[in-house]
Length: 224
Image 1 (cartoon, rainbow, N blue to C red):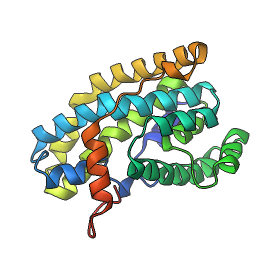
Image 2: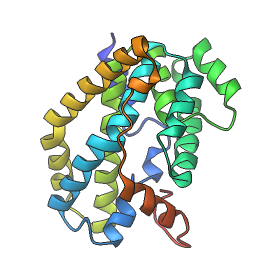
Image 3: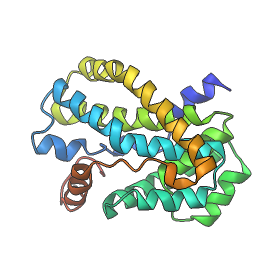
Image 4: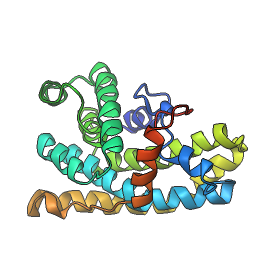
């Protein structure tokens, strides 16, 4: 497996559109749930073990070679918020453009043809990892890192938070991120044998609720 490919895929400068999204941090800041680095750490930890775990397992399953169309339906079922489903497909469409330009593959082409308006981003991420020669746990790591790095980057802009503090939050979460990535990869392996119901369906209801309200804001800094 290529460590360099993993770095490219996980790089925040990879043109997959994530920079325009706060991962729920913008409404959390407005509501006062994120005020400082401590609040950011709590928010990211909660996201890591809920929505992050679910996305990571879906990405790992796609990297393992499970049917991406069935995984896309499973992602829909695990995303109760219409606003978040729309966001996931927009990000998936952008990720698809970047992935096909970077690591062309028949699997990416087939999914793009089947889901012209975009598949869920974790599914595309998993196929991109597979096309890059990466494994399920690599895909899980990428999904989880995005789940926490997006809010951390957004908090720097929203709160004028010291970027050193935001980076320290991510560094301190690293052991938990590794553990959740391994958990997601195991779940994907179980799903290959037992079916997609073996994939986790952890959710964060407050993220779903605030995503709906945030989508209706007339003025906002981030798309989600």
